[in-house]
Image 1: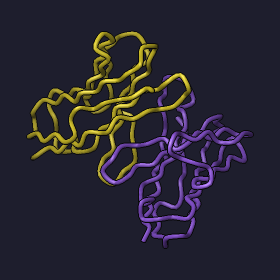
Image 2: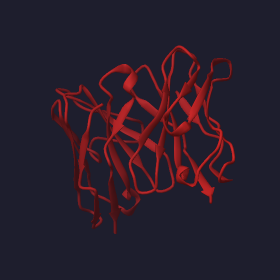
Image 3: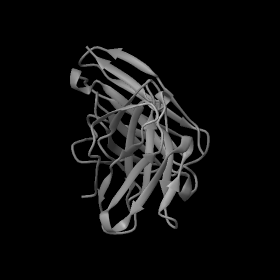
Image 4: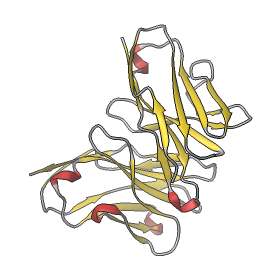
Length: 115
Length: 112
C-alpha cells in the first residue's frame, strides 16, 4: 500500500493567519482525500482532490476557507485560511490503497491549535 | 445520504473480556466496509475490511467482523481483549463516489 508523508505534524497558529499542510505520496494516485478530526470526534471528509481539476468539497466546507492544490499525482496541499480557534483539529490526508482490496492509507495527521 | 452509526461511544473492559463493537450503515447497494483503529498518539491503521465473499472477515491482532446484510451491520469482535487494545475504533463505509465515510468512533479502554 502507499506511504504518505504529511507535514507539519503539528503547529500552533494565531487566529486570522493561514496554514498550509502538505501530503506527499510515494506512488501516483488519482484521488486524494482531506479529512478533519475535531477533538473527541470522528473523521469528517473535507474534500476530494483530483489531479488536473478543482477539488470537490463536502457540505459545510468551502474553497475560500480550505483551498486545495493538486499539482501532480503524488502531492497535494490543504490550506486552512483565516483561522479561528474552532479550526483546531487534526487534519489528515488519505489515498486509496492502490488496489480495491487494500483499503485506504492515511497520513500521520497535522495537529493544529489556533490561539 | 450514506451514513455510518456506531452505537457505543465509550466501552470499558477488563483484560480477557470479550469485545463486540456495533456498526450499522445506511446504504442499500453494494458496500465495502472497514474497521480502522487509532492507538493513542498514532495515526489510523486498517484493522480489517469486507469487499465480498465470506461475510466473516478476520483482521490483524485477533480481530474479526461479521457482515450481516439483512441488518446493515458490520460488528467488530475480539474474543479476549488485551490492555494494548486500548484505542479508538472507527467503522467506515466506502461509497460509490469513492469516498470513505466514518462512524463516530468508539473509544475502548481496557483495564489491566
